[in-house]
Image (cartoon, rainbow, N blue to C red; front, side):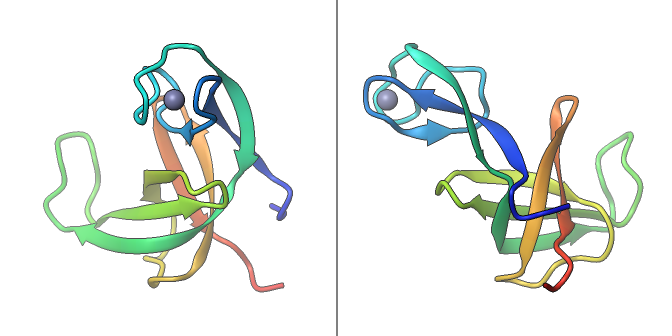
Length: 107
Ligand SMILES: [Zn+2]
C-alpha cells in the first residue's frame, strides 16, 4: 500500500471529466468517447455507514463508505476492516464488480 497506487477510471475525451463506473457514457456530457485513465487510488471518506441487516450474500456488519478520490471521482466502496471516520484516507481497489476500501496506515 502506498500513495502512488492507482485505480482505473474513465476519462471523457470530449469534456475531460474523469468518472466511475468505467462502463458507460460520460455522466457530464453523455459522450461515449471515453478512454481508461489511471487515477490516484487514495481518497477521503465523505461518509461511512454500517449495515446490520445487509443484502443477501453479505455478512453483517456490512460497512460502506462514500470516498472521494484525488481526481474528484466519488465511489461507493465496501470497507475492509473497521469503519473509517469521516475525512479519513482510504485506499480503494476494484475487486471484480465491486470496489473495496481499506484504511491507509499513518505515514
Ligand atoms: Zn464528457
